[in-house]
Every structure is written in C-alpha cells, then in structure tokens.
Image (cartoon, rainbow, N blue to C red; front, top):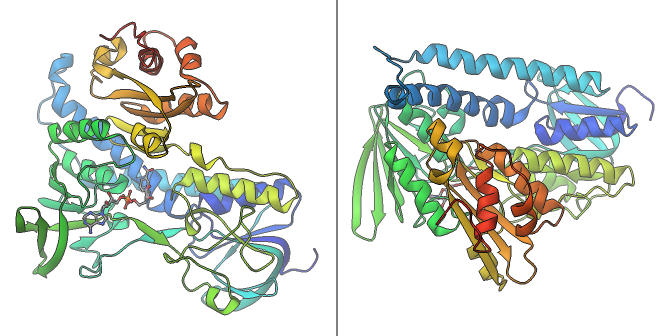
Length: 468
Ligand code: NAI
C-alpha cells in the first residue's frame, strides 16, 4: 500500500501481543504500523506487570534468603537491612532498559511506531489522537491488542493510596505495616510475597476454599502451607463485603462461615482478576461484538464480525498471559498472510513467580476426572531430590497426570524453585504428544531439580527410584 497514512496492517497496542504481532507482520512483508498511547512500548507486561514484578521478586528473594538461611550456609550477616528506594530504582532501570530494547527491536524489524490513542472508525480506517492533533490512518487489516486492566470491587474503588491495584503495588514508597490482599491468584501471591519479605504483615483474603484452583487440591494445599511457613496468612472461603477508608486506614468487613469480621489495614491490594481494555475504542459504533465480560468476540482467525478488524491477547478470550498474547499475535499475522497460524490453547503454561515457584500445564487430575478421563498420577517431593537438598530448595513437589489407557501426558504441576524453567520441558513433551513413559525414559542430568519430573513420571507407573 502507498501513502503516508496507509498501511497493510496497523496493530493497536504495543504489549507483548501487539509488538510481537507487528514484528511477525513485517517479517511476512506487510507494511506495518504499531500504535501506542504510552511513550514506552511493552504494555502492562513490561511497564507495570511481569517485568517489574519479577525484578522486585528477585531482589526481595535474595533479601529473604540471606535473612532466613544465611546462617545455615555458614554465612554471617550482621545488620542486614533493605534500601527500598534503591530496590525500586533497580526495578525501574530494568523496565527502562527493556523498554528501549523493545522500541529499537521493533523499529529495526521495519515496523513504524505511531504515538497516540487509536479509535476504530470502520471501513479500514482508524483515528489516532496524539493529544495535540488527530489524524486518520487506513489499513487493510487492523489488529486490536489493547490488553487488560485490573478489576475494581464496586464497593471499594481504587484510590491509589489505600485501595490499590498491581500498578501501585509495584511502587510503594514505604513498606506497609499491614497489607490485606484480596484474591489469592497470581498477582495476590506475588505482590503479597514481595511486601511480606520486606517486613509487611500480609493477610490474603480468598473467596474460594483454597488458593490456586488450577492445581489439584493437595498440590495447592501444599503450596499454601509453604507460604504460611514464610509468614503469609490466609483467610479462605471468605468474601470482602464492604470497606471504610478513614484517615489513610482501611477497615474491611469480611464474611466467612463463622460470621462477619473486621480487618484493619494500611494498604488493601485488590487482585481479583483483570478485565479487557475494550472501552474508548469506538467498538459500539462499528458493531464489533463483545461478550458479557467486554472481551472482543473473534473466530479462530482472530477475525471480528467486521472484515479487516481482528483482535488478540488479553482483549479476547483465553488466559490473560503475555506468552498467550504473543502466540495469538504470531498466529494472527500468519493467518493474514494466508498461512495456517495456530495456538495450542490446551498447552499454555501458567507460572506464579513466588519461591518456590508454582507452574502448571495441561489438565489437573481433578479437571481430567471432570472430563471423564481415567488417569494415573505420579508425584515426587522436592525433599527427596539431591540438588534440592544441596541448595536448600526442598519445599515443593512435582505431579504428573497421564491417561490411564494410552499413558499420554495430560498435565504437569510443579512447585519448586525454578519451576518456571522446569515447566518448559513438560510443555515440550506434551506438545509432541509424549507419554509418562517418554518422560520417565528421558535422561535428566544429575544432580538437577529436573530429575523430579522424571521421578514423578516413573512413580505414575509405580517405578519411582528415589521415592518410597
Ligand atoms: P486471578 O484471576 O489469577 O485470581 C483472582 C483471585 O481472586 C481468584 O482466586 C478469585 O477466587 C479471587 N477473588 C475474586 N473475587 C474475590 C473477592 N471479592 N474476594 C476474595 N477473593 C476474590 O487474578 P489476578 O491475580 O488479579 O491476576 C489477573 C490476571 O493476570 C490473571 O489472568 C493472571 O493469570 C494474570 N497474571 C499472571 C501472572 C503470572 O503469570 N505470573 C502475574 C500476574 C498476573
């Protein structure tokens, strides 16, 4: 396509879904533009999500490890303390460096970056409002990749000071004395651990009877016990029903089967899920359909009801995860090019980056049984792994779920230090249709934590070598 404001593809939103999609479009020979309203590319993941939270988790993990275990390693550490501004500065530096890296990468791949807020006009047209001017652009294909935002509780609006969401929770200027976290999902656990390690008293209120419902009950129970040992406290099967904020302090009213209770806190981190960023895009005027949660409805080619307008990532169905959005982006670009882009939604791994990390892929035993699939399972405790013992990483376990008849691996759950890396080989086995026997016969280096995957697979057939 020719003309200054005319492109083959315009991608709206430069998070991991959008910028990866734009790169793939450019690789496929399309004249591609990427629109972003924030000066720094990278979306939630890079600016206020995955990356800054992992920087904080790492710094606080070092602090916690030294504080709790240095003595056992024969390391004497007197007057240990943290420096919160320095810790935050490091996190901001990481975000800044990666932000510059993404812009340079996208540009070098031949994508044009446009700054401003985009609104879909229909007929292949888009208005970009830069703040000082509005311009019309056109493209054969427009891809909406506008991501998601934290969900607010109706009776407790975010004020950014006492009632906060994850964007605020990565940037407090002092350690709260008492923090209540509402929701024991990925965000609640990760930020709960960060502030608990820095000295806050952290209480997590969860509506469901157990944390991490994606895992089998005995696995999530064991995760909770580990975090309780680290100092977090949990109120399960508990609903927050109202909140009062007076002079910078919150009083929450919570309900459980014992009745109604009050909890005081100086910060309340609400982490009850995220919702799609599908407002202010002009969708209603174009007739693009959304579901009851506001997510844009698309078909298997990421195509909305309006030809030439597609959507990917958090703003459509599926888990709100950066790697899922990236896969959507690649597949969407390939579909536009007439190729057979595909995402295997059954094998999107999930990771919670606490210590030990929690990772899972595929079906849990409970989910398999709900689908009437007969399974065999095997598990292996990290405490029986030599490397775990040598490095003080004995908390956790691996559980393998396989089809009883075919032995095909259906799911793997890992609680272990480094589970985020260990899960990759589980996904690879499953992507290629591997069986528990395949995993059991795969040679794993000794001594490594990864041997526990092999051992869990062996134990699913009663052949565990290092467990009873
Ligand atoms: P989540 O959906 O993972 O967990 C929310 C939790 O809050 C659930 O356990 C739910 O039962 C509970 N809940 C909901 N309403 C409640 C209420 N009124 N009172 C008490 N508990 C309540 O949501 P989260 O942690 O906010 O994360 C949002 C999204 O971001 C998720 O899709 C998550 O996967 C993604 N994310 C992923 C990360 C990772 O992969 N490490 C890190 C951060 C976010």
